[in-house]
Length: 427
Image (cartoon, rainbow, N blue to C red; front, side):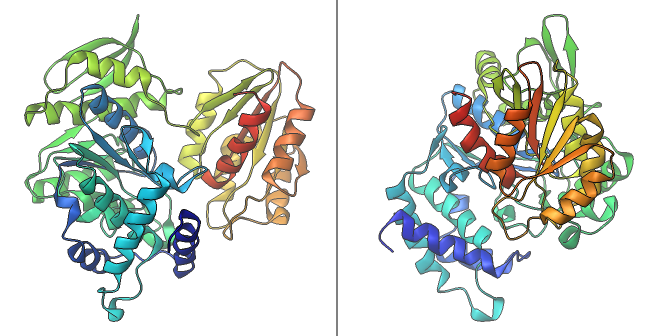
């Protein structure tokens, strides 16, 4: 494989093997690479929702403090290279070819008895190796799914973060909050401090039990640290102090929780000896960018995209939409068939004047018939569109300057929409 196009074709071909929870393959793979994930310190960020935003904030603060920071997140919106970044710069095509070739060679040593290496295991190993070769000072690693059996769980972090615990990926993580909490708590390591942004008693109890068993100090949102609205901005009551007049570059009340988790993690890094001045904290929060999360792409009409893909995320988006002023809402929805479609729609469809359903380019996407039938039950006008782009065009044509268009339901839907809307909205 000599070009990035060939590499990406190979990588996406691995997706046909599906999701493969378990650590044996990734352990063998990184061992063959010389365990690159142990070559630098890291922060490990998990949770059902908010983990990407929290990881982005943490990385932004560390970068403003002068560190060379690797950031690994998933999935991507538009380009594969978005997953692997150093100081906000995506991995280059040349580096992509070099690193993937090295990982593919290492993958040959993984015993066939364990099964073939999955797409996510391969890309996780790529990130680990790239960060080692580029000599990052620290990496922020986002969990892909769950935690206990996630490929990222071979790291040895300085701090573990669990943002939230909600129902999602039930086929792999279980159908109850308790079972999912156990999976999320699986990233807790012996003696490594844990930041927890969850507030539901059952989930917090399970996380606390796991932390206690591992001798891992636990810091909980609302107890050991908190974030509130102040007269001149956000106020953070931290583990060791208070910071007032904070400004946040991300929209939505839920981002206060994510920012609090990021700041708690930063505090614990400071306790471990990392130099992170107050100015870096302020500048990092204010300057953070995380596309596709209550992202405003246009104003007349208001155009918002958000990657909400489960009921909790949809409820959060619903609350965020209340922060904006508009007359009618034109809701563009494309959802995966294995998600809780009714749970997502019930949080958003009642807000809409018109629901436009579509199918993103993804084998897992729910069909137009399913989407139309589910949306029709809310008594709203329902329009079907053959593609995400067609749905966005229909929404923009129907909306007046005083209205709003919101595209959501899946990161795949949002990724396709963003590419189109950035062109037509002039950004």
